[in-house]
Image (cartoon, rainbow, N blue to C red; front, side, top):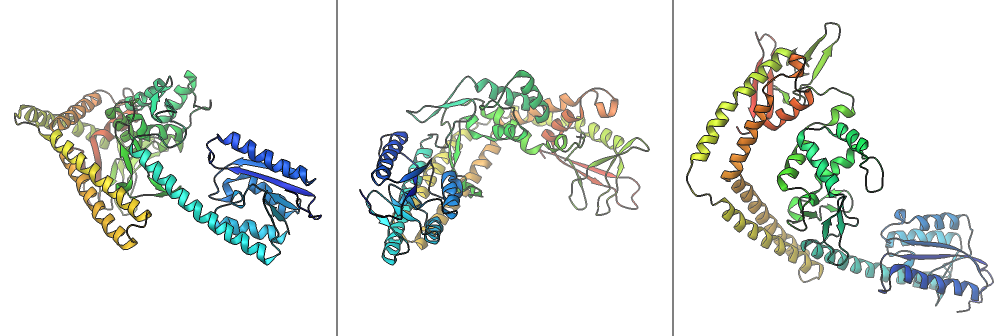
Length: 492
């Protein structure tokens, strides 16, 4: 189309796609649009500069080429911006107003293959506003459909979160994950954490073995944490966790699909590693503070705060720190010896509890109960999802939606609580837990480096104690003849 406007000499050609809207492939669609707009420039004898990107119109900040274009517009580099359609600039009404303001202030035209917009003219400005409003409404409807489609895919156990995690490849046809040759690296990371290797030490091991990230970089502290916390490695997909980027949804709104794809590690290994990384304090090596055998385990019996340790170099002794509430400190070595003695003695009641449990002959119906509850839970979650769809389709109003949603969320919460209760009654789980605790105590028999100058390291002792103990409550009030120590074991 020929535009007879002598004010236009040099233009910016802006191309943007966020998805394959014409089912030809994004690159092909972009090539078609590029050819059409360049032909338009040549037909009108305009010189041009190309700005091209594949990006969502959700906000300007994430669109690098648009940011560059706006900066040049403010410096009055161009007489016009050439686009395929108005909504290529933005479908977000807030960003549209910013772009429109810059174009108006710089007296820059907007040109499409079918029309020229002059924002200094009231009728063009009004038409552009109406067109942008319609595009924004269409975008919101498209976004709703895309989100609904994504949720449905997630419920089917399909991978919808972009690049597959390390150790997995996404099948383009089934959209499912399957393990690849890097799965062994992931298994190694999990096994080392479960064995008691600290993350800083593991990072050095991975580096020496030449094991890198997918991009070929050295592993970092946070990348190991993300791997250990990733549900995908136990064959589970957990999605719909956040609203936007940062706001966490209530757990009952998460979409969790078990056995969605082949696991790289078994669930027991995943749970153990996850518990170690999230409950055991790894912050000490990073902040160059020492890990003691009881780090993050000793609490003030008066105020509940963690009581750490410190070293008095002038007398070469370690002490439990004085608490701000007035609870006094004490020489650390004899306290640690008391803790060791009490922990080793705890093996006897555990053995008795194990013997009693193994001798019980009653039938264990735990799995039957659990299967029934899981079916109920899945049914309730599907019902909750249907309520959302009904609201989005305007079949119910906001009041009805909130009432029905609250009822279903309460139902889901009660079922999940019952599942936890049933799991805690599981005889086989109880037996395994007891055996693990007994094995942990057996591991603590022998010399401790802190007490004996040789034997198990402070880090290993701390790791084992975290598996056995929920807290050591320390009390040494002013005027007391001797300190008091109460150990709370996890099975108590």
